[in-house]
Image (tube, rainbow, N blue to C red; front, side, top):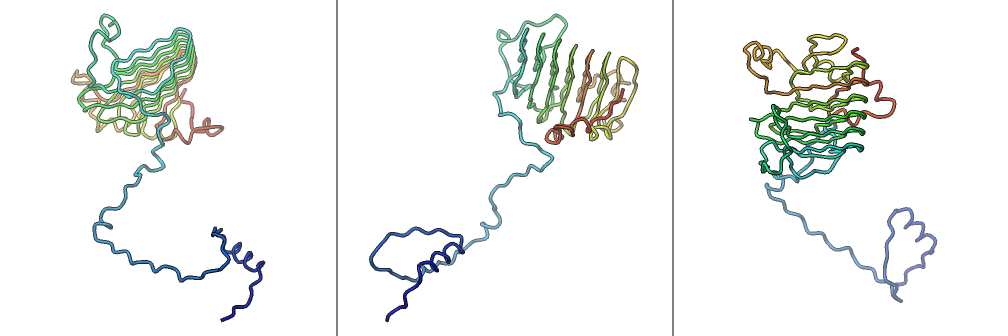
Length: 271
């Protein structure tokens, strides 16, 4: 059978219209073959009952801003004329030989993480790991610099965070499930709570020097009963302050929303 000749331009147009570029070896004879028959795919019930894994994190769970780090405990870092910046996974149950620990100050318990700078900022991304029976003690201080402390996540680990600066802004990011008291002290500044934190904040007292309150449902937490009984609160706690600067508190899942001009609109001054 004799086939009519086809216009080469029409072939090119057809290929361009299809959006698919094909490559074939050049031969003197054009061969035409039927496409292979696709065998039916047989699935069993397990294919549907065991779907591939997927990411369960929603938009309110921002991706970690820093890579995971080796687990540490009782880590102490001091810089005199430099900043402190890093990512830390604090395991409150990790046993460290006493010979490797920093010198203890009489009357003071060792912090699980202590970051201080004399002339420089302090910036920390922290993951907390525990078994629920120990509270992490965290300290971040700067004499002449800002302090930014982010608790990215925690597993069975309440914490007490002290974040302070003599001359600089103090910003802390806490988990959404934080339940505990907050004490903020400022001489020339004030406490700013994000719009997401405000509805969960219960004020206790406020004067020129300090603001005291509670973040979370303090009535069901038993916080008042514990204090009245003379027992010690072992849940979450924030102690934040700046002599010359503002203190800002918001949830860690707000991190991605903060930026540019939107940052200032997130906060409303308390003092």
